[in-house]
Length: 320
Image 1 (spheres, rainbow, N blue to C red):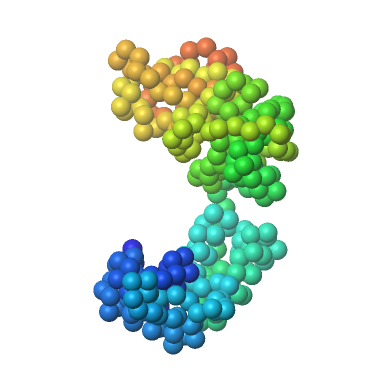
Image 2: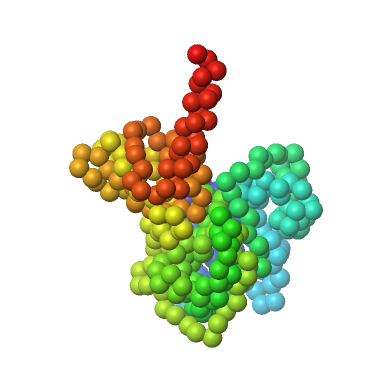
């Protein structure tokens, strides 16, 4: 909130408002900054002291505006904003501590463009902080990501080449509705003509993409994050159906959206979904659920469960 900002930060915010809304009055600046009119005038004074030409005029059409020909710095971050930016980058891309990394190189250029007083701490944070990589995150190709974003914005259908986790490859024409980042992984939410259904594709598994000449209209009131969550566990090679002998309200906190949809079944519940990686589904996901269950069908899951059971039984025998 603006009330938590330093005077310098509020002055920069006032500069942004004058760029976007020339002619803003002290009253309007005060309302948008969440301060008094007197304070708003003081922030205008800070801008003038910094050498930025802010003109004022009276009358019904009066207000503040930037002087003609005013040249503004390319980057105008407060120290808090700069540190927050570096922290966010390192959190999402631990390799950015290396200047040879693509994101690290870009971050280094941003830091060098900052005023010395602001950039010094940001540079030290980048140089001395260490971040452990998230083994579950993925890093898609920037060119493919850019092409998909362009198609989403232009509402153009695309032809994508995809490789699943199990190694299967296919081409599919799709309507790209949105690109969603979820817990370090990038997804394309789309309507796939190949599957004739909504699908979620991992961007790091898309090998190629190109726009076609066809256009589309996304669903009305589209909520990409919610729709992604609802469809993460659908459309993969191996159908899954797991029955739990515990109430749905108790099992639900342990179920990831990618595992499928949980439904009430008698006094227990059933998890219906699909996967392209039965081993991961059993060893990392099902094994973590602390309730009794059985697999209804899906021989691939049963096979992986048998392997896991045998391995754990062998480990247990060493103690008896």
